[in-house]
Image (cartoon, rainbow, N blue to C red; front, side, top):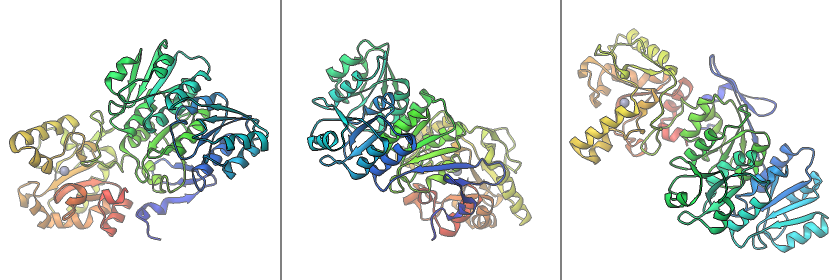
Length: 505
Ligand SMILES: [Zn+2]
C-alpha cells in the first residue's frame, strides 16, 4: 500500500510493546505505544486495564457523548485511585459493565445528573451489579465541578478553566490531579458565584487558557490568579506542560485536542504515572508540541485513542519533530524560538561579511555542504544567499515591506514574523552568478537551478514553494528556497510531487 509517508517506512520495525523506530546514526530511537479500543467507551476500558490491571475499588462514570460534567473529574479519580469509564446515557454500555466486573469495583461515582446518566443506569448498577452508587450532580456544570471539588482533600490551590469547551480542562487535568488541585469552571465573560465561592480563600488560582476563552475581566475577579496560556489549545497544552513539570520525563501521552473523551480517560492514567500529556491534531503534531518534544528530548510516547482519533503518521512526526516543523501562513513559531545550535556551512556566499543569514540549524549543515559538493562536481557555480533569520529580523523585513508596498503586497512576498521558514534554520536560499546572485524565478532556468530541482532531494532538501502550488503553500514559485526535511522524506515528496502541507496532513 502506498502511504504518504512510505519514504520513512524502511526504518520501522515492530517491537514487543509497540512500534519502535530505528534511525540512522546519531538519531535516537523513538518508542510509541497506543492504547485504543474500537470507540471511546472501549478506549476508556483499555486505559483502565492498563492502569488498574489488578482492579480498583472505585470507578468514576461519565457520559460518553458530552463533556461538561466530566471536565472536573480527573482530580477526584486520581485521589480515589479510580479509572474514569464512559457509558451511554440510558443504558450501561456492555464494555463498561464488563470492566467494572473485572476491576471488582464496589463503588461507582456518577458524574452529572439524570439527564447525563439516567436513573435506569444508576439502578442497574445498584440492583444488578451490587455496587454502591454516589452521584455528584449540580444544577449546572459549574455547580457539578464545585461539588466535585468539595470531595477533594483540602488544597489551597485550584485551577479555573473554561466550562464552555474542553481542551484547556483536559490540558491541565493530569497536572492538577497529580497535585490535588480541583478544577473549577467559568464562563468566558462571567465568573459564576459557585466557582468564585469555592476559590475565594485560596493562596493561588491558576487560570488556564487565553483571553479568547477567559477574559481579562474574569481573570481580575479571580483572587490570587496566575494565567497559563498560549494563543490556541495546542500552545496552551505546551505552556501547561512547561509550567507543571511531571516527575517522569520518560513517557508522554498524546491525545487529540479535537475531542474530549480519550484525553479525559487517559488523563487519570497520566496523573497516576506522573507523566505529561500533550494535545495534538488528528493528522498533525502542532509546532508547540513538536518544540516541546525536541526540547525535552522525549522519546517514549503513548498515543491515546484509535487511528480515527490520531493517525499512524504521528510516529514520524514525533520522531523527527524539528525536521518536520511546518511553518506557513497558518502555522507559526513562537518569537522565542531559536534553533538549538546554529552553524555556518562551508559553502560559497556572494558576500563576505559576517551575518546570521550565513548560518543554518546544525542538523542541516552537513547536508547542505554535500549538496554544494554535488553541484561543484557537476561543474556548476552554486551560491548560498540567505539561511537563518531570527524572529526580530523577519519582523523588520515584514514591516518595511508593509511600509513601502502596503500589506497585501507584503503578505505575498514576505512572511509575518513567526511565519518565516527561515526561522527554523532549515531553509537556505540559493542562487548563481548567471542571475547576478539575485533570488528570482529566472534562477529556475539556469543550469544551477535545473540541477537543484533535479537533485536537491538526494541531499534531503525540497524546493519548498514549487511552481503552481501557491494555493497550497501560500507563496509564489521560489525555485531558490531550499528546505531540509531529510533524504527519505525529500525523496518521497519528490517522487509523489507533494508539497510539505500535503505531506504533513
Ligand atoms: Zn527563502
